[in-house]
Figure 1: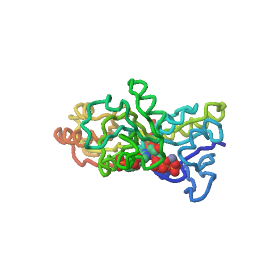
Figure 2: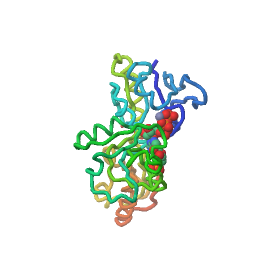
Figure 3: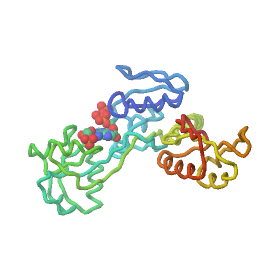
Figure 4: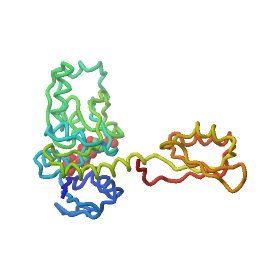
Length: 283
Ligand code: PRT
Ligand code: ZN
């Protein structure tokens, strides 16, 4: 049976459990548990701190893990990135006090930079030929400049609100991250096959996000024009209507395209347009 490590509590915990649930896999919420058996798939769930997940997977304590790319890159353990999971988006950026007149990367030469991501930062500085002092601190990195511990910080940013409320400005976006599914590199064929079943479910879920199922009635003579407007998995589904000269068209459209396409379809005579949520799209 596969073992998957997820974050016990924190930003990725809920969405990891939600993704599993959408894939038909029910797991206990962590609350003081270390390990639990899932329902709906042969899977054991290990609840860990996110910092420990890359190592647990590299050592084979867990076969799989759900964790931020930032942790994978910082820890540097040998794990396979199986797929990106589309949540936990953030970036790791360099930020300086808003009183600094920032001249570009050269600013960091000889400066003290506080971070919880020293490896990613030192790699970046080495590539850019910058010589700075990196101070590793865990937590509350954003207050380091105000208390005189550092001249700048290198930290996770998502909305940017934390930087602003600490009088800091984001000046270099260095590393983009989202949650990923990682796998132990030493897995056998049987485990890989089970992982394939799991990732098939995850891919279907991710692909159907942001998609809508659209149905409408249309005069048959405008069908060719409608097919050119509508994308589809292969092509739109066309069904006859009882009323002579009319048909019904069904198609899947992304949310970004939805309104523009609907306006064009209305313009060629589409009526009774229904837009439905799409639960899952299995290719
Ligand atoms: O206890 P454990 O070690 O498991 O959790 P943790 O406290 O180390 O991590 P946690 O739960 O805070 O974050 C887990 C993962 O979520 C991170 O490793 C990232 O991959 C991802 N993530 C996404 C974030 C953010 N967005 C984020 N905004 N992690 C942290 N933040 C912090 C950021 O540092 C800032 O201080 O949230 C604060 C608010 O950000 P703004 O820019 O929205 O204000
Ligand atoms: Zn952590």
